[in-house]
Amino acid sequence: MSLARTMESLMAGNSVIRKMFEMGQDMAKQYGKDAVYDFSLGNPVAPVPYEVKNAIISLLENQDPHEIHGYMKNAGFEDVRTAVAEHLNQRFGQSYSKENILLCTGAAGGLNVLMRCLLDEGDEILTFAPYFTEYRSYVSHYKGVLKVVPLKEDSFSLNVEEAERMIRMKTKAVILNNPNNPSGVIYSAEELTALSEMLVRAEERIGHPIYLICDEPYRELAYDGREVPYMPNLYRNSIYLYSFSKTLSIPGERIGYMAISDAVEDSACLMTAAVIANRTLGFVNAPSLFQKVIGQCLDVKIDLGFYDRNRKLLYTELTEMGFSCVPPQGAFYLLMKCPLADTEAFTKLAEKQHLILVPTDGFGLPGYFRLAYCVPYEKIEASIPAFRALMEDCKEFLRKEGTELPSEQ
Image (cartoon, rainbow, N blue to C red):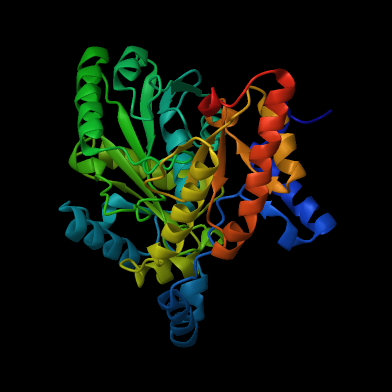
């Protein structure tokens, strides 16, 4: 084969999320979409806020087409970057200007830009398990190495102590995803303060900055009044990445931003590099129309109650059936512990009930399944009998093996 070996490797390890999603699509063709319960993909279905539609119509009707569809500075439209900076300053007490803001093609585009800026061959990026599966690809694209900090035993809190042991001269940055995909956990202010203090110690030990890359596309999806601490207020070398995909229910539009404050070490140099990388990686600039749209929708959010209803229904029903689940605090994901030692067997039993669930081995967390509850409420209601049947199938599977579910032992 004439493909690069690195690409062949990526193909071999293609995203399990996409594999399960494609399986769900095939099953829907075979059985009908109403008979398939697909919890694989984090594809938001909450209604797009009316302000987004109004902004699109107004821009198309009233703005110069050459302006809203043409090139601009690679960092993005200056008026939009100024609006983003002022929004962050007002909300979080920062002192950003337009020079601190890069508009990018979602948080994923921003992550790739940063990896291009920071990594030489063999350099290391740390992240905490469980983590978004694509981080490994984003790092390997630029010949870096992703190091995964393992979970504490029986805890989804940050393993700060182990992270400190893993940091060495080759460590360039730490990626922190909060609220977390896939766990739905929100890291507390206490945990994040401990992380910040540890990173300061580690910087002093190794003699160079360690950037904390804050990947926060789910910031606005926080339930029960929980707050997501703003890390640039806790750790000066924080680089903030944000996407509007989930907040406005527009994932296909690929629009977000990067914020690098003047407090970040080498901030001006880093921002210049990011603007150049944004161009030379082929992004060129963030989508022009939606730069202007988000400039008018910075205070707009989807109705959080849409996902909160789903969260409560799914968690309550599954736990009452006997499934062990991590209480979801943010995002729109629920982690369910596999009741069988054999996750492949469980996947097949789930498929038998037309349930599409994502095993979390690729997230650095064996033995669990991720359920994306960003689906219509009615779909979750309709799936409940299938989950009950799945639990009965699991019990029968274990009886044949001469064992029982942990809760029954």
